[in-house]
Structure formats: C-alpha cells, structure tokens
Length: 257
Image 1 (cartoon, helix red, strand yellow):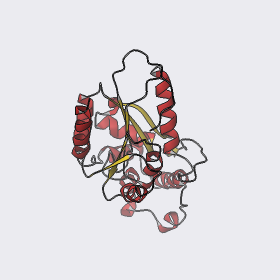
Image 2 (cartoon, rainbow, N blue to C red):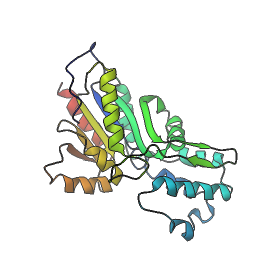
Image 3 (cartoon, one colour):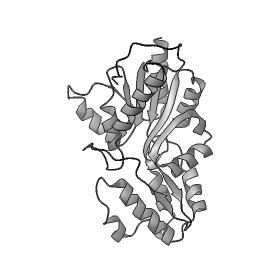
C-alpha cells in the first residue's frame, strides 16, 4: 500500500508489518450469521424474510434477521453460545499463535462486516482478543427487549462496497493514522487476509510490496485472479487453504530481513 509521503522517523519501531483480518470464513470457518440462524425453529429463515433482502444492504438485512430472532424468543445466551462454538478456519489458530510469538514484528487488526458482539464473543472465547490492536466492524449490542441491535459502521461513497462499510476506506485511514502516530514511519509491508467479495476493495489499496492472502476457491480468490490480469492491480496474491500456508509465507518474509 502506498503510504503518505513523510521522511521523518521517530525512535526505532518494533512492529514492521501490519496484518488485517476479515472475520467470517477467514478467522472463523463459516459465516457467524449462518451459525446463529440455525438457532431458529427449522434452522432457517422463512421465505418471506429472505425474499425481502436487498443486494448491497447487509446491515439492513441483518437487522431484519435479528429482529425476527428476538420475536422467536432466541436469547442472548443462546446467540453468544452459538457464536463461541464456531470453529476457527483451518490452521488459523496456529497462524495466530505464530503471530503472537512474533508480536515485535506484526500489528494485527480486524476489518469485518460482521458485528462487534459476534467478534468480541468469539475472540474472547478463543483467548486471542488481546492480539488485535483494533477491531473495525458494525457496532452491536442487546437492547432492553433482548434484541441484538446492529448499526452501520460508517457511510461512504464507494460504489463497490455495501452501503454500511468500505474496507478500503478503513484500511487507508488506519494506515495513514498509524504512520502519523509512529512519527512518520510507515509499515514495511501490509498483509490483508480475507475470503469474500468485499475483501477485494481493500486489496486494491495494497502496493507491490504488500500481500493479499486470499482463501483459495472463495469469491475473493476468483475475483483477484481476474484482477491480476489488469495492470492496475499491484499487490502480490497468495492463496491459502489453511493458516499454515500464511505462516510459511510470513516466515520467508521474516528471513529476508
């Protein structure tokens, strides 16, 4: 990713690399929405509700689902338990263990179109919340009626992204803010780990020194393969099936020092 130009450096920094993680089907092995929907009678949504969904309006659609679940008597306790039981994606816990062992090199953040309640619950249960400096996601919390209320993360003008979140805008702002906080020192490399179509937009902000880790066979992978044919796409693309694939790549990069 191209960082804002600034040649001023402060005291030597510890963390040279930034790693951004998606959550659903990247850190965890499935969609957190799907996991909680299985709490409903019949383990699925009624047709009238799914037929009301609008493309590109994730936040609005999810609010409908959460309101329906509250009406059906699905409790906070059962939702939290369902989220906590979602298995990690293959090898991701080993990847996080590796990153924890190299905290002096890697700064970690989550950028997800899920919600703060699901993400916090899962990370805390897995005992990995402390590894992440920041979580960017849609705010969520239970109201007095027992309904999980979801709010949009922000508004934006990006035509590629859902109306509630542009991950590229978040990435660019975070990198610029961190460079200022680090006295003008930019990250040597930025790594983005994802799987979905909405992980393509932030990958477009990566530079030739950066890496987009795309889950093999998922939408992000298929779309980036097409984009690689375009001269406008700059980042390196490394497909992954399990977290160990990412560890192998990061270990090679660390040896380049």
